Image (cartoon, rainbow, N blue to C red; front, side):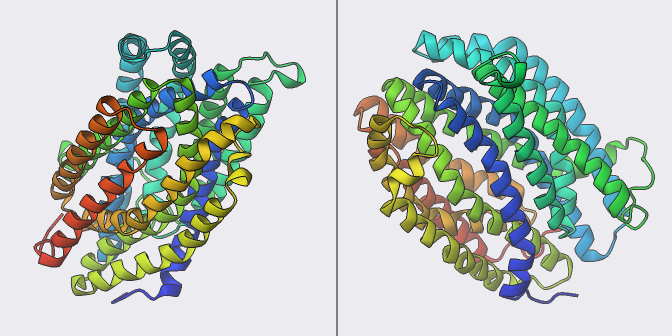
Length: 443
């Protein structure tokens, strides 16, 4: 039984998550890098369509966070056989959710985008991307249930292998389908969407095969497929529903940010997509430690050692800064090197430099903010986490509406919105953890 977690133990759990998230980030980087060599319209459209799809995906991801919290709690309590029941009901739910959101997106996303996208060229390219991208929901929604299982049971090395397979698949599919190499049709932005969906299929197949061959299915109750039980769904949704809502609103406001930027022009949107993709390299480091913190918080509480949670949070923040600060310095001192990954257009690189610098400064606050927020979710009080998130997002939305739509500030200044969000969510979560009302929470 773990009463606390050393830096070495945290790193042992976090680094496979970091590698897996980095591999997943490389999928978005691959799409951006390839489309950055097709044209600014395609680059901007992939930002709008990509974030639109992420809003859909993050609803499912929010459910998987709830599943992960419950699995981690049962793992900490030593009730391993109950994990299988949670896992399979997660699969049942995600399959139904994928079918529902696929149909809604496939039929209504063109109508929605038509009303909110100013540029006709970006609209047409975005619809072309989404037409194929939504097929990936059937694969990615189920794959993240496997991810929740491996995170909740702290078997995180599997995520590294899976992500490596997925990103390599995406590179191959993009190379073949975007530019039409080796006799394949030249599909442009649609090829990027098809490639990403196929890579998610490969990821799901890998998880299934690996679990059957390498995991003790009997120990975790994965050897038998349970019947559907509404009581299990009710218990899962009691935790997951709030993370689903939280993720939906969080990504919706991010989509709103890109939508506002699109009204500043195609160049501004292209810059924002490049900086967003570059930001992902920093973000994966933060989320690796934040995800680890959330899982270990749930495990510690399950073992009866809630008093050690505050120190656990501080350890994760320190470790995250150790990796994030050198990356921030690299991005700041060598912007051309970083931006050159995404586009070979020199004028676009120069125009994006200031935005890249501002983005780096936001992580001074986003590091502790994300760790504390995942810790709040790890306590099982996901309804409270939603309330804290909504309060921060209200401030964020007000801020971006004022500086982008009203003041029409330069795109670089618009990136200060992430700093505003980070300050408020950090303050709210810190005060909540300090008050300690979460210690007696039963899930």
